[in-house]
Image 1: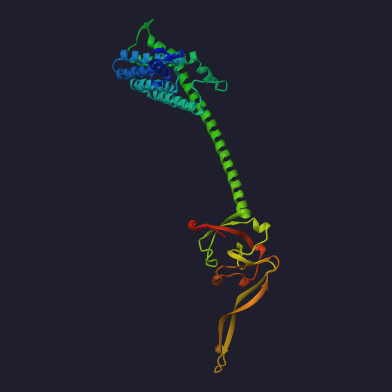
Image 2 (image 1 turned 180 degrees about the vertical axis):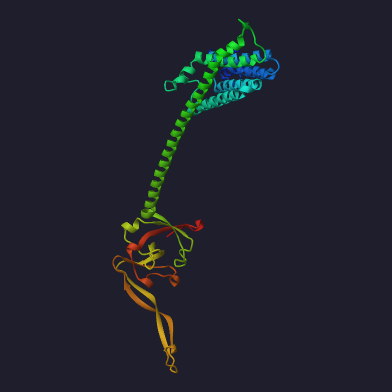
Length: 408
């Protein structure tokens, strides 16, 4: 429906607009209903009918099997004509060929038990080599297992030419069909010689040649797979080398960061209570200790002057030039002698601690450190000022526990 508005502009009705929208919706391809795939389904049905009658009715079985084999050429032509070549169709065609031939060879093994080994060998070569070649084509990314280029094996290039491939497949199937029919009948005679037997003799060399070409399929596929494996192994080694390179770089960066920038320190012991407690985690930095003079009040991490394998956390209370007055503890020994005895056993020794106020000047290149918990801290009051070279880092803040984060 079309109408005109006051300005003369054409207004298109709802039905026409809706129709155009529907026409604009693209239709999705149903791969399973493509013409070559429908032909493939028909081939499967014919092959199943042939299998059912194969041991009892050679006429029905022979015609169904031959028709199924001939349709193998028709589905490829339909795929090219209707532009409906698909990976599913190629796989369906390949599986139908292999299963059909294998079903016939099983029957021939039953009809000709003397030659069972050769039929079994033919089945194994046909299935294994074609499967390997088909799978390799997918792995290497070919658009089709029949696709070849100048780098391909010359036998493969010749074999997969359209006319050559069709001829080889036809004569191969004809050889096995003739063997099947000869079990039931000699067929038409020419000069007293069976036509089926004559065709079997004529096609036998080509059937043998096709089996040999199947072995070439396996050889070419193995070479291609080996090339893929080699490339993947090289890529894997390259990735591992890159991973190792990045790991070394990361380790170097991490080492440099913790050695020259800062790190994390876990506290242990009561010497800095109540400022710090055991299991507190500190964030420290090492830049200021290298480029700036230490300041009074800084909490520092240093190597213990009494044990080089141990780190200590203390507070700087004196810098070079400061006069320190400290109540330094001393241990003294007293000896008492028993007047009634003369032997050495009569000497009794005892120790006691006395405190003495001393003054000490912090020399150049040293600092005086003490723990905040003076009653339970081993610090400069015992071993004197420490060299600046023992200071490793300065504590910035406490980051653990999270509920007690604190700038130091």
